[in-house]
Image 1 (spheres, each protein chain N blue to C red):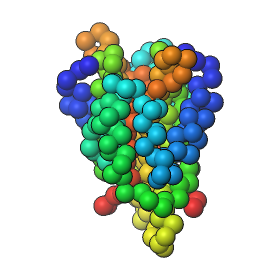
Image 2: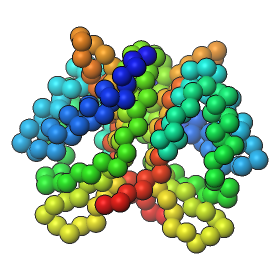
Image 3: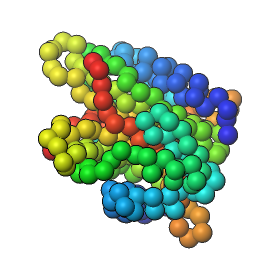
Amino acid sequence: MNPNFDTIGKQFVEQYYSVFDQKEIRGQVAIMYHPTDALLTFEGQQFQGVDAIAEKMKTIPLDNMMRQITTIDCQPTMDGGVLVNVIGQLKNSAENDKPLGFSQTFVLKPANNSFFIFHDIFRLVIHNM
Amino acid sequence: MNPNFDTIGKQFVEQYYSVFDQKEIRGQVAIMYHPTDALLTFEGQQFQGVDAIAEKMKTIPLDNMMRQITTIDCQPTMDGGVLVNVIGQLKNSAENDKPLGFSQTFVLKPANNSFFIFHDIFRLVIHNM
Protein backbone atom coordinates (compact mmCIF):
# COMPACT_ATOMS: atom_id res chain seq x y z
CA MET A 1 0.00 0.00 0.00
CA ASN A 2 1.21 3.49 -0.75
CA PRO A 3 2.00 5.32 2.52
CA ASN A 4 1.40 8.66 0.80
CA PHE A 5 -2.20 7.81 -0.13
CA ASP A 6 -3.66 10.80 1.69
CA THR A 7 -1.39 13.35 0.01
CA ILE A 8 -1.82 11.69 -3.38
CA GLY A 9 -5.60 11.69 -3.06
CA LYS A 10 -5.89 15.29 -1.93
CA GLN A 11 -3.43 16.61 -4.53
CA PHE A 12 -5.33 14.72 -7.20
CA VAL A 13 -8.65 16.28 -6.12
CA GLU A 14 -7.16 19.76 -6.25
CA GLN A 15 -5.65 19.14 -9.69
CA TYR A 16 -8.80 17.51 -11.07
CA TYR A 17 -11.20 20.29 -10.11
CA SER A 18 -8.74 23.03 -11.12
CA VAL A 19 -9.17 21.72 -14.67
CA PHE A 20 -12.78 20.51 -14.53
CA ASP A 21 -14.12 23.79 -13.15
CA GLN A 22 -12.85 25.81 -16.10
CA LYS A 23 -15.32 25.08 -18.85
CA GLU A 24 -12.86 26.05 -21.62
CA ILE A 25 -10.39 23.36 -20.60
CA ARG A 26 -12.72 20.86 -18.91
CA GLY A 27 -12.17 18.28 -21.65
CA GLN A 28 -8.55 18.01 -20.55
CA VAL A 29 -9.54 16.01 -17.47
CA ALA A 30 -10.01 13.11 -19.88
CA ILE A 31 -6.25 12.49 -19.91
CA MET A 32 -6.41 11.70 -16.20
CA TYR A 33 -8.61 8.66 -16.91
CA HIS A 34 -7.25 5.24 -17.89
CA PRO A 35 -7.54 5.11 -21.71
CA THR A 36 -9.60 1.93 -22.00
CA ASP A 37 -10.64 0.72 -18.55
CA ALA A 38 -11.81 3.90 -16.83
CA LEU A 39 -15.46 3.84 -15.75
CA LEU A 40 -17.52 6.97 -15.14
CA THR A 41 -21.00 6.92 -13.62
CA PHE A 42 -22.41 10.44 -13.88
CA GLU A 43 -25.86 10.88 -12.34
CA GLY A 44 -26.53 7.22 -13.09
CA GLN A 45 -25.29 7.27 -16.69
CA GLN A 46 -22.35 4.93 -17.37
CA PHE A 47 -19.36 5.58 -19.64
CA GLN A 48 -16.20 3.54 -20.27
CA GLY A 49 -12.84 4.71 -21.65
CA VAL A 50 -11.37 8.11 -22.39
CA ASP A 51 -13.28 8.73 -25.63
CA ALA A 52 -16.72 8.18 -24.13
CA ILE A 53 -15.79 10.12 -21.00
CA ALA A 54 -14.41 13.06 -23.00
CA GLU A 55 -17.63 13.19 -25.03
CA LYS A 56 -19.69 13.25 -21.82
CA MET A 57 -17.55 16.05 -20.34
CA LYS A 58 -18.56 18.30 -23.24
CA THR A 59 -22.23 18.00 -22.34
CA ILE A 60 -22.08 18.58 -18.60
CA PRO A 61 -24.22 21.65 -17.86
CA LEU A 62 -21.97 23.29 -15.30
CA ASP A 63 -20.97 26.57 -16.87
CA ASN A 64 -20.37 29.02 -14.07
CA MET A 65 -20.35 26.87 -11.02
CA MET A 66 -18.56 27.69 -7.81
CA ARG A 67 -17.31 24.62 -6.01
CA GLN A 68 -16.74 24.34 -2.31
CA ILE A 69 -15.20 21.15 -0.98
CA THR A 70 -16.44 20.07 2.44
CA THR A 71 -14.50 16.84 3.06
CA ILE A 72 -11.98 14.60 1.27
CA ASP A 73 -11.52 11.05 2.64
CA CYS A 74 -8.76 8.82 1.25
CA GLN A 75 -7.91 5.13 1.76
CA PRO A 76 -5.00 3.13 0.31
CA THR A 77 -5.90 0.13 -1.88
CA MET A 78 -4.00 -3.16 -1.90
CA ASP A 79 -2.61 -2.54 -5.40
CA GLY A 80 -0.94 0.76 -4.50
CA GLY A 81 -3.87 2.91 -5.52
CA VAL A 82 -6.08 5.33 -3.65
CA LEU A 83 -9.83 5.41 -2.99
CA VAL A 84 -11.05 9.00 -2.66
CA ASN A 85 -14.45 10.28 -1.57
CA VAL A 86 -15.26 13.97 -1.93
CA ILE A 87 -18.26 15.75 -0.42
CA GLY A 88 -18.93 19.32 -1.41
CA GLN A 89 -21.27 21.89 -2.85
CA LEU A 90 -21.83 23.44 -6.25
CA LYS A 91 -23.46 26.81 -6.75
CA ASN A 92 -24.37 28.62 -9.92
CA SER A 93 -22.50 31.91 -9.62
CA ALA A 94 -24.85 33.66 -12.05
CA GLU A 95 -27.95 33.03 -9.98
CA ASN A 96 -29.12 33.04 -6.42
CA ASP A 97 -29.94 29.34 -6.49
CA LYS A 98 -29.47 27.29 -3.40
CA PRO A 99 -26.15 25.42 -3.46
CA LEU A 100 -26.40 21.72 -4.33
CA GLY A 101 -24.52 19.09 -2.40
CA PHE A 102 -22.49 16.55 -4.35
CA SER A 103 -20.64 13.32 -3.67
CA GLN A 104 -17.85 12.09 -5.94
CA THR A 105 -15.87 8.87 -5.54
CA PHE A 106 -12.62 8.18 -7.40
CA VAL A 107 -10.36 5.13 -7.52
CA LEU A 108 -6.83 6.00 -8.67
CA LYS A 109 -4.29 3.35 -9.68
CA PRO A 110 -0.59 3.65 -10.43
CA ALA A 111 0.68 3.18 -13.99
CA ASN A 112 3.75 4.55 -15.81
CA ASN A 113 4.98 6.53 -12.79
CA SER A 114 1.68 8.31 -12.51
CA PHE A 115 -1.89 7.65 -11.41
CA PHE A 116 -4.91 7.11 -13.60
CA ILE A 117 -8.57 7.35 -12.65
CA PHE A 118 -10.10 3.87 -12.99
CA HIS A 119 -13.41 4.68 -11.29
CA ASP A 120 -15.44 7.87 -10.97
CA ILE A 121 -18.97 8.05 -9.54
CA PHE A 122 -20.63 11.48 -9.38
CA ARG A 123 -23.97 12.31 -7.77
CA LEU A 124 -25.71 15.50 -6.81
CA VAL A 125 -27.14 14.88 -3.35
CA ILE A 126 -30.82 15.58 -3.92
CA HIS A 127 -33.44 13.89 -1.79
CA ASN A 128 -37.23 13.76 -1.87
CA MET A 129 -37.88 12.72 1.73
CA MET B 1 -14.98 -8.21 -14.20
CA ASN B 2 -18.11 -9.64 -12.66
CA PRO B 3 -21.09 -9.10 -15.00
CA ASN B 4 -23.46 -9.23 -12.02
CA PHE B 5 -21.80 -6.28 -10.27
CA ASP B 6 -24.98 -4.21 -10.12
CA THR B 7 -27.07 -6.96 -8.53
CA ILE B 8 -24.26 -7.90 -6.13
CA GLY B 9 -23.79 -4.28 -5.04
CA LYS B 10 -27.47 -3.59 -4.51
CA GLN B 11 -28.14 -6.85 -2.66
CA PHE B 12 -25.14 -6.14 -0.46
CA VAL B 13 -26.46 -2.68 0.44
CA GLU B 14 -29.85 -4.10 1.37
CA GLN B 15 -28.27 -6.83 3.50
CA TYR B 16 -25.79 -4.47 5.17
CA TYR B 17 -28.32 -1.87 6.29
CA SER B 18 -30.85 -4.54 7.34
CA VAL B 19 -28.31 -5.53 10.00
CA PHE B 20 -26.70 -2.14 10.71
CA ASP B 21 -30.01 -0.38 11.29
CA GLN B 22 -30.99 -2.70 14.14
CA LYS B 23 -28.97 -1.49 17.06
CA GLU B 24 -29.24 -4.84 18.92
CA ILE B 25 -27.51 -6.73 16.10
CA ARG B 26 -25.47 -3.91 14.53
CA GLY B 27 -22.19 -5.49 15.65
CA GLN B 28 -22.89 -8.41 13.31
CA VAL B 29 -22.01 -6.30 10.27
CA ALA B 30 -18.40 -6.80 11.35
CA ILE B 31 -18.37 -10.29 9.80
CA MET B 32 -18.96 -8.68 6.38
CA TYR B 33 -15.57 -6.94 6.59
CA HIS B 34 -12.28 -8.58 5.60
CA PRO B 35 -10.72 -9.80 8.89
CA THR B 36 -7.38 -8.01 8.64
CA ASP B 37 -7.35 -5.71 5.61
CA ALA B 38 -10.72 -3.95 5.82
CA LEU B 39 -10.51 -0.17 6.19
CA LEU B 40 -13.30 1.97 7.64
CA THR B 41 -13.27 5.76 7.58
CA PHE B 42 -16.20 6.97 9.69
CA GLU B 43 -16.63 10.73 9.79
CA GLY B 44 -12.88 11.07 9.23
CA GLN B 45 -11.81 8.52 11.85
CA GLN B 46 -9.87 5.55 10.47
CA PHE B 47 -10.11 1.90 11.56
CA GLN B 48 -8.49 -1.25 10.17
CA GLY B 49 -9.57 -4.89 10.59
CA VAL B 50 -12.66 -6.52 12.02
CA ASP B 51 -11.78 -6.04 15.69
CA ALA B 52 -11.28 -2.28 15.44
CA ILE B 53 -14.33 -1.91 13.21
CA ALA B 54 -16.54 -3.97 15.55
CA GLU B 55 -15.44 -1.79 18.50
CA LYS B 56 -16.35 1.35 16.53
CA MET B 57 -19.76 -0.04 15.61
CA LYS B 58 -20.64 -0.26 19.30
CA THR B 59 -20.13 3.47 19.74
CA ILE B 60 -22.04 4.80 16.74
CA PRO B 61 -24.80 7.06 18.09
CA LEU B 62 -27.59 6.00 15.76
CA ASP B 63 -30.21 4.46 18.00
CA ASN B 64 -33.55 5.01 16.38
CA MET B 65 -32.67 6.20 12.96
CA MET B 66 -34.84 5.78 9.90
CA ARG B 67 -32.84 5.33 6.72
CA GLN B 68 -34.01 6.24 3.26
CA ILE B 69 -31.79 5.35 0.33
CA THR B 70 -31.83 7.84 -2.54
CA THR B 71 -29.39 6.30 -5.03
CA ILE B 72 -27.07 3.28 -5.30
CA ASP B 73 -24.36 3.38 -7.98
CA CYS B 74 -22.22 0.30 -8.67
CA GLN B 75 -19.15 -0.27 -10.85
CA PRO B 76 -17.22 -3.53 -11.46
CA THR B 77 -13.54 -3.54 -10.45
CA MET B 78 -10.79 -5.29 -12.42
CA ASP B 79 -10.32 -7.93 -9.70
CA GLY B 80 -13.91 -9.13 -9.78
CA GLY B 81 -15.08 -6.83 -7.00
CA VAL B 82 -17.66 -4.07 -6.85
CA LEU B 83 -17.40 -0.36 -6.03
CA VAL B 84 -20.65 0.88 -4.47
CA ASN B 85 -21.69 4.44 -3.67
CA VAL B 86 -24.85 5.04 -1.63
CA ILE B 87 -26.58 8.39 -1.15
CA GLY B 88 -29.40 8.63 1.33
CA GLN B 89 -30.89 10.23 4.42
CA LEU B 90 -31.00 9.40 8.10
CA LYS B 91 -33.68 10.72 10.41
CA ASN B 92 -34.07 10.30 14.13
CA SER B 93 -37.47 8.71 14.47
CA ALA B 94 -37.87 9.89 18.07
CA GLU B 95 -37.58 13.56 17.23
CA ASN B 96 -38.66 16.03 14.62
CA ASP B 97 -35.13 16.73 13.54
CA LYS B 98 -34.40 17.53 9.94
CA PRO B 99 -33.16 14.47 8.05
CA LEU B 100 -29.41 14.36 7.44
CA GLY B 101 -27.96 13.38 4.09
CA PHE B 102 -25.25 10.76 4.01
CA SER B 103 -22.79 9.31 1.50
CA GLN B 104 -21.26 5.86 1.95
CA THR B 105 -18.75 4.19 -0.35
CA PHE B 106 -17.94 0.47 -0.22
CA VAL B 107 -15.43 -1.65 -2.11
CA LEU B 108 -16.35 -5.36 -2.07
CA LYS B 109 -13.93 -8.07 -3.16
CA PRO B 110 -14.50 -11.78 -3.76
CA ALA B 111 -12.99 -14.31 -1.36
CA ASN B 112 -14.05 -17.85 -0.38
CA ASN B 113 -17.13 -17.85 -2.63
CA SER B 114 -18.37 -14.69 -0.98
CA PHE B 115 -17.64 -10.97 -0.88
CA PHE B 116 -15.89 -9.04 1.84
CA ILE B 117 -15.90 -5.30 2.47
CA PHE B 118 -12.35 -4.03 1.94
CA HIS B 119 -13.19 -0.32 1.99
CA ASP B 120 -15.94 1.69 3.70
CA ILE B 121 -16.08 5.49 3.83
CA PHE B 122 -19.04 7.07 5.62
CA ARG B 123 -19.88 10.78 5.80
CA LEU B 124 -22.90 12.74 6.86
CA VAL B 125 -23.35 15.41 4.19
CA ILE B 126 -23.22 18.57 6.28
CA HIS B 127 -22.03 21.83 4.77
CA ASN B 128 -21.30 25.28 6.15
CA MET B 129 -21.57 27.31 2.96
